[in-house]
Image (cartoon, rainbow, N blue to C red; front, top):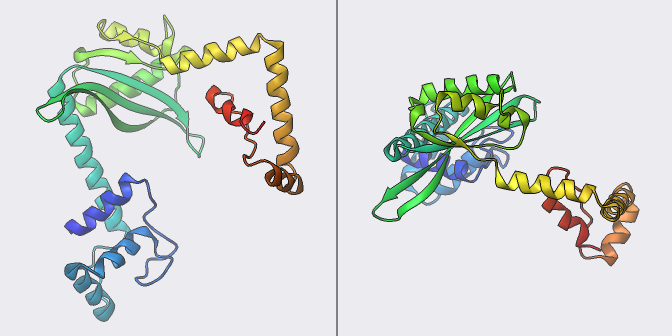
Length: 266
């Protein structure tokens, strides 16, 4: 069981898929979990004995099924969360970092991150950020987000009076002076000072500055036309790759630094 848990941790840390198209030992399509099990079984006598028992006697109690994998994933996640929560409560004071984004199913999710100072003999004092999962959000207003977060903090049994900071993006539902998340949370804890995300603020400044320059607008407009010209035809893209070592990139409106990739090929 300890070996199987190690496989779960290995795949989880690297964000790798567990299962393939089937769950048969010996199949090349059985996924990373069973594949690693088979690889370790070649050198590990304990796993080798289990593998032989499964193949020869067709035993069903082998702890390799998808339900057992899911249970192990949840148990490891629970222990990880408890360890981080212990560190957070030992530090006492913390700040919160929240951000919302839609997932692939177009469901709004809010990430919950706590920042605190961890002190130990080995590393001394260091700032640490701990991720505590995604929260489903049906109401993206400041009030709706606050209610979701308060429910989560209650589940974690956190003392809101120990919060000393808030950090969000510049969205009106987060930074609003009257109805924003930060304003509503300040009424609960006046010591939780709000600081807008510096990277997001800088990105907004750069975007708005460039929008005021006609030359910049024309320049990046040409880059967009070049990308559209070559990406819409496989023949033109092949000619481009033969003559230019770098491929053209599309521009991201929310990530200004991505545009350096658009300029490099030119």
